[in-house]
Amino acid sequence: MRVATETLELPFRDPFRIARKMPDLGATSVIGTITDDDGSTGLGEGYPDSYYGETPATIEAVVPQLMDTVAELGAMPDELEAVRAWLVRAAMAMDQGLSHNGAAKCLVDIALHDLAGKRLGLALPELLGTPREVQPTDFTIGIDEPAVVAERAVRAARFPALKIKLGGPADLETLEAVRGVYGGPIRVDANTGWTPEVAVALLPECVRLGVELIEQPFKARRLDQMGWLQGRSPLPIVADESAVVEADLEGLVGVVQGVNVKLAKVGGVGPALRMIRRARELGFRIFLGCMEETGLGIAASAALAGLADWVDLDGNLLLAEDPFMGLELGDDSRWQLPTGPGVGVRRRVP
Image (cartoon, rainbow, N blue to C red; front, side):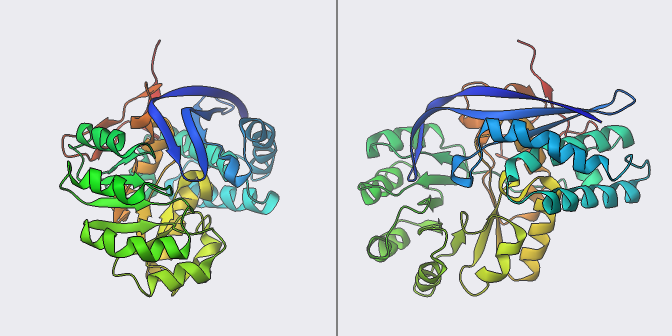
């Protein structure tokens, strides 16, 4: 199998800022194409986040190494159960061969699943054995002046929930402004931007304003603070930066009620499925999240959306233009999963 990568610069519809990153005007994502010996192709996406030590350059450097590791497994088989087992072995081999680099592994894993689905004539949910009935997605609004956030909330009023990025000096004013124009559930994401003092002050206000959950209030390693807040909070605390891969789950038992599973963190759709299943065994609620990916990465993630309690798959909706087509959002804000083989999306013709 051969692999080629391409880095895409993707402007946002609106400037997008989170607590641990300055305002961004666009996203950068890496698309990969795996070509089998018979000419069949599989598409994958890896979204590099510098917080996790990845850049487009690291992905482009690491992907060929990962493909060499996968090649040692031999050819992909032709029978469904054998293919599923082969894909699991491929993900395990990548993990054993290289630590971290979740986005690079994600690119390869999605592309292998896309290739497998096309070879077998199966759409991704059927390949994975996941339900087609999915939860609706929320819509995310980045940090900005409270009035600007409220204006964007009005524009996003069709969504059944809004995810509001916090972690700045105007957090309470922002929540008040959003609640003034939007009646549905609000999900708060501080992206490690709070201190315990800020969290204690904002917690009763979050309850009063109808916040549904609080995501990653503190630094990733401060599980002591996360557990301290969860013990005082009637709202679920959800770990994101503290819950990168499946191995992180054991340490979060008794600390938080929920975990955010993202393909670009854990290494692809197969590892994400296994992380979700293990999280359920440990009693966690599941928040299925994303980066600012194209419709390719979102379509792969959406194949797991029937397994989550909360769905935050809106990365491609934040882009000025999605370079992929084939994934449609219904009037009920549920992703309509493609029925074609593999992930089911294709590159938009310029």
